[in-house]
Amino acid sequence: MLDEDIQKRLEAIVGRENVETSNASLLAYSYDSTPQFQAMPDAAVAPRNTKEVAAIVKLCNEYKIPIVPRGSGTNLCAGTTPLEGGIVLLFRHMNQILEIDEENLTMTVQPGVYTQDIFRAAEEVGLFYPPDPGSMHISQIGGNISENSGGLRGLKYGVTRDYVLGLEIVLPNGEVIRTGGKLAKDVAGYDLTRLYVGAEGTLGVITSAILKLIPQPETKKTMLALYHDLEAAAETVSAIIANRIIPATLEFLDQATVKVVEDFAQIGLPLDAKAVLLIEQDGPEEVVERDMEKIEQLCRDNQAFDVSVAETLAEAEALTEARRSALSALSRLKPTTILEDATVPRSEIAKMVKAINEIAKKYDITICTFGHAGDGNLHPTCLTDVRNKDEIARIEDALEEIFMKAVELGGTITGEHGVGVMKLPYLHLKVGEAGIEAMRNIKKALDPNYIMNPGKMFAKSERERVVISK
Ligand SMILES: Cc1cc2nc3c(=O)[nH]c(=O)nc-3n(C[C@H](O)[C@H](O)[C@H](O)COP(=O)(O)OP(=O)(O)OC[C@H]3O[C@@H](n4cnc5c(N)ncnc54)[C@H](O)[C@@H]3O)c2cc1C
Image (cartoon, rainbow, N blue to C red; front, side, top):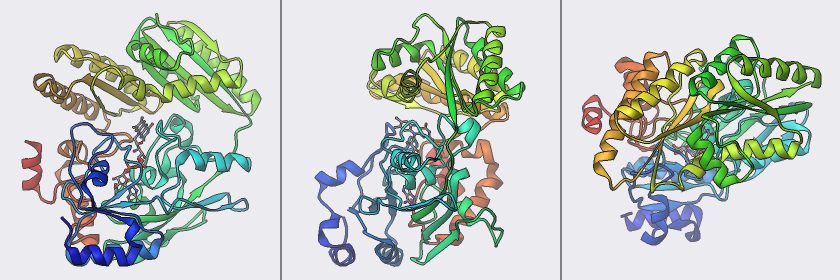
């Protein structure tokens, strides 16, 4: 519970109406989209501007009160679970697009703007903001930046990191800094912008961001390729890239995922295929035509039994929307959905798909797999029930084996969802103990009182990590 005096001081900063302390309202901030993690905060505070954020952070730093910045809570790594209580920081008042600069091709936004609104606002002036996480209708840019989120267009256009030119940040001591700018080039000192992209709220609070926009592609085409064999679909992914074609989108869905997505979206997806590739190319018309012809040939060479191109824009949109709905569709099947995002080099995608299926069989669990195959980023998704302790234990063992396999293939434990609490026990597999120690030192230097999103990404000390892992 928050000390009465602290509560009064918070109310003096943001106004009484912007401090929530009742259990009923705090319950909503005790969990996020990650199953199995929950902890109550002591208060939820909604500042109206950077000055108020800075005053809150200063106060919390003085009294060592944890702060958990929270966007829409759609993260899948328990990144916003207030493990150590404290304050959840909400951005519902800081949700404005501050500027679209058509000369410099930038957009300046506050952290609470929805990703979809950024995409739409850019589109309205003939520009393009490519990062499109499946959650883009509901996720906020502060969350996207802090998780370095990717999306269906990541293969050709990159991820959120590639579109963040500058940030305004409230440091854990309450000081405000501005990094980068509307600049194509900037090598003045350490690249703090990059450090804060993907920092998961552990190093400070992002209070505004300058985003890069690019010209809209002239045209696009969307294709579906169907397979009787999972690995043949995965091999096509590697073949397309090896032939030096970079599609805008190259998504993989296994049969189980296609079935539930079709049940959910009702757009006539093929139910007899063991695997489906959703492929999109955009750009000048002649390039799109040439690439799609070549891709179709590669699909057929790799045993696709059917390849079809969407005839209208509406049909193409329906296909990509259906793909974006994969997680929501799967989560209707069982009470608990555990979604992972092991990632491997593109050339290893077939091996990873095969390994996931073998691991599912070995542990006798249901894993549906879909994902951004062109990025090597797969989402093995376990459908289960958290009350089934025996199955949950087998799933945990299976997931550990999946992460180990991904790293063995030159990959990583998370391609886009972040570490949070969920992947904390596995981080050493990817970065090693020395890597964790280097990160801990950065944390200590910027946040010596451990107030910013404590307990996320890595434990305070090696001893604590061992305890958490158990
Ligand atoms: C259905 C579904 C589909 C998804 N699809 C994708 C996908 O395709 N690609 C992908 O990458 N992810 C995906 N995700 C995961 C998730 O949507 C992303 O991680 C997203 O960026 C989180 O945004 P959010 O606003 O919900 O942030 P939150 O979940 O609220 O927060 C995420 C992290 O950011 C920190 N944070 C938030 N705001 C700030 C701020 N202003 N300053 C500092 N730190 C801050 C939080 O502390 C937390 O660590 C999906 C999730 C769901 C539920």
